[in-house]
Amino acid sequence: MQILQASDGKPVADQIAGQLARDIQRGRYKPGEHIREQEIADRLGVSRAPVREALRIVEQDGLLENIPWRGARVVLLTLNDIEDLFLLTAALMAIVARLASERATDEELDQFILMVEAHATTADPSRPVREQLSAAFGLGSFLFEIARSPQVRATISRVVRLVYWQHRVLNGVDAKWRSDAVQTWREFAHVLRTRDADRAERAINAVDRHARRRVLRIHRELGAAVYDLFSEGASKAEETG
Image 1 (cartoon, rainbow, N blue to C red):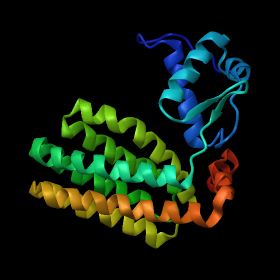
Image 2: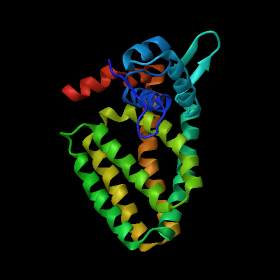
Image 3: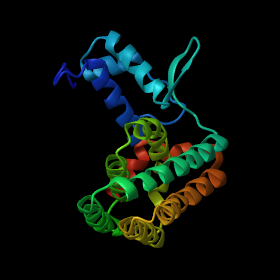
Image 4: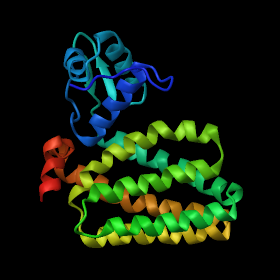
C-alpha cells in the first residue's frame, strides 16, 4: 500500500490525480473501465474524500467521464474523437513551433537538436516503443517551454495528455516506422534552428502526421478490439517480449 501525504505544498488530491492519470496512461485501467473510489483509497492509503476530488480533477483533464448512477470510468473515445484530437494537436503544435522559432534563444535551439539526437537512441528495435514515445513527448514539452506562451501551453496540455494516451496502440510498430519518426524530428529540429517559422510549422506537422496516420489506421482496423492494446497486460507483454 502506498501512503500519500501532503508534500511541497501539493494537496493530496492533486497527488492522487497525478497517480491516476499515470495509471490510465500506462494501462493499469483501460478505456471503459470503471474506477472504484474505495480501491484507490485502499491502494494509496488515503480516505475516500481526496480520491473523490482527484477523480474530478482527472475528469476535467479528459481521461475520465462521470456516468450517472455508476460513477467514474475511463473515457471511451470514438474514432471521430481521436481524429479531432489529432487535428487540434496539429494546429496547436504549429503555433508552438512558430513561437519557438521566434522566441527561443540560440542556445535553446542547439539544446533541442541535442535532445533530438538523444531521442534517436530510443528507436533501437531492442528497446521498448514506449521509451521512444516518452522521449518524443519530452521533446514536445521542451518546445512548450521555449515557445514562452503560458496561454498556449495551458490550452494544449489537456489535448496532449489524451493524444499521448492514444499512442499506446503503437506498441507493435516496426523498425522502419521508428526510424522514420526519428527522421521527422531531426528535420524539424534543423528547420527550427533556421528560424523560418513557416517551414517550422510544416515540419512539426510532418512529425504529427507520421504518428497520426498509424494510430488512426490501427483504430480503424481493430475497432473496439483496439482497447485491448491499452491494458496493463499488453504493456507487461512488451516488457518481457
